[in-house]
Image (cartoon, rainbow, N blue to C red; front, top):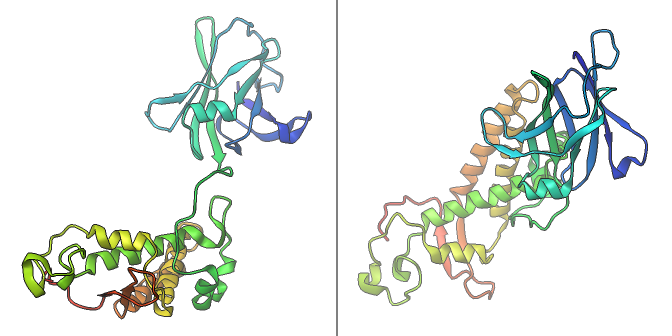
Length: 304
């Protein structure tokens, strides 16, 4: 068996077969949205270009899907003979089966085995790639917009986003917010608001506060989650530059990387330089006035 022709059938293709890929039994790639149903017809050919003969309808077929290497089996997709005499096999991926098996968007190894008499034959050994489908996930909150990123990188639109990325580099902008929130939480000094910012009297440490711990303040983390940070232009600038740096880092490996690496380092460095000049104000009561200030440019001595 030296050749394999794969045709996919799905609701989106009507009744006509669509050729997905032609190639050998190893290295083939089957791709579909994870919320769709599709049947793949595998036809096995011999060196002479004719379908292999000699299979029986009772010859067992087994399909296996796993993450790769020697990982455990995740799913046994339905597989059956269309015509053993003509060496045609149907391999099916259904949305319900994928969901039940816990398959998420990504690439997985797939193998189809035929047991013909004393022989165990690999009829198919390739990759199935499932693309994301609409769901209920929400985007990570951000401090900057795509337009803000383009202020510092007007050429950003030339870095084409793949179908796996979020519009306007939303994932990178979300990570930029997480980066800044982490800096704020790590540099919160407590002071008269005590270690966790919830004791206006100063607590047992008096007006100088108590000895800090290495643990993040749950109070400050909660304030940030509730979007109580006052987002001033300097915060937009720092996070926009950081997001651009993340986008550039993601281009490494997609071609000549020297310029991408250099620009990524520059934008990330600019973001850090902007961050150390920030005074981050947290408005705990939503009156538009900062109630807690966190200076990111001060030395953190672990004393309030």
